[in-house]
Amino acid sequence: MKLARLISKPLVTALVCALVVGSVSPVFAQATATTATTAPTKMANIVIVATGGTIAGTGATSTTTVGYTAAKVGVERLIEAVPELKKVANVRGEQVFQVASENMTDELWLKLGKRVNQLLAQSDVDGIVITHGTDTLEETAYFLDLVVKSSKPVVLVGAMRPSTAISADGPINLYNATILAASPAAVGKGVMVALNDQINAGRDVTKLNTSTIDTFRTPDLGFLGYLQDNKAHFYRAPIRKHTVATEFDISNLDVLPKVDIVYGYSNATRVPVDAFVAAGAKGIIHAGVGDGSVHKNVMPALTDARKQGVIIVRSSRVGSGIIARNGEANDDELDFVVSDSLNPQKARILLMLGLTKTNDTKELQRMFRTY
Ligand code: SIN
Image (tube, rainbow, N blue to C red; front, side, top):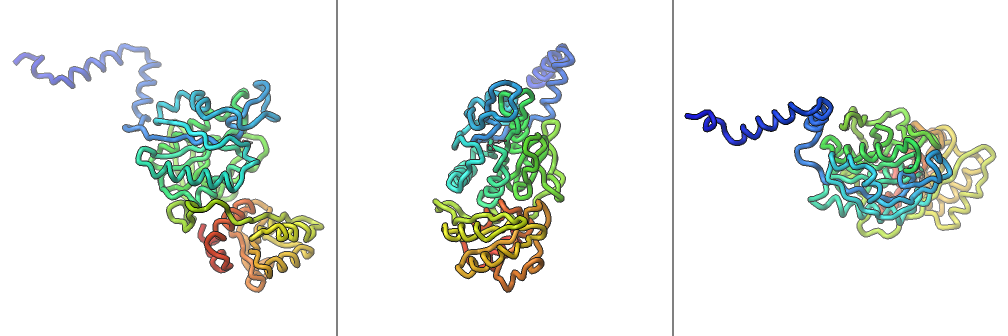
């Protein structure tokens, strides 16, 4: 039998390919090898949902890194600016709104949450990346962590420098966020935040610096993992219940109960509490000093508000730690709730969603121990 007949067609093709690859430059050969080891067998379908922020911001010059205009560039241009995205996923963009995130509202959250749930219910969507301003990114991440009804990855991403700046961090952050959203290891991890090569849990992450690119941190508890070498590397997972394991359903909601935050400080007065109650607040988060302590000038306003049916949650302005129930106030007697380890802005979100289910303080306290 002739040699040609002994060799199958696929084998001939493989040999020809090997000869061709062997004859190209070492740089190309190396790039081919890297792609071969990192490219998933079937690329994930990722939707990039754009909402605005600095990642879509433009400055007057390449050195304008403060005083620029956020929320200017549309999602198609964001995607075009990172052609490498096509190598890690099948991406498509959708602009749900275009705002600087200091102007976030409950209505925009409901719109975003409903759209994310619709997209994730589709069999041709494997994960979602949400581009967002960094100022309230942690709040949107926790809101979605509580209302998304899917285990598929949802990743929030932003940038600290506008798209026009030298060393803009948006492109690499968007690239890494897409890798994370396409990663099988990210399934079931809740809503995550990916900036500066780090993966943080939506519940725990907070913005800690006004301007540096390493601003997102998870005080004390630490981040979940790294984005490095075109891969997501996880070292821990969120324990608190999230996404498919929560009791919250926004599908029929058009508004959220009004909850406001009152800040604690030396010489504080009862004025803000009374004003919020008069304006119709259903709940007040008190961002107390230390372990959630309340100034003696403010405590009577909180107890009066509680008697009128307003839910009072003691939280803290310090940035980490658990509020001890019946520690700095007799919460059982006052019928107050404590925020567990949620910072005031996140406690507000959980109380709003909790109030869509119940006004019972014991039930609300259970939720703060659960999520
Ligand atoms: C914003 O939050 O929209 C502006 C600031 C930023 O994205 O870093």
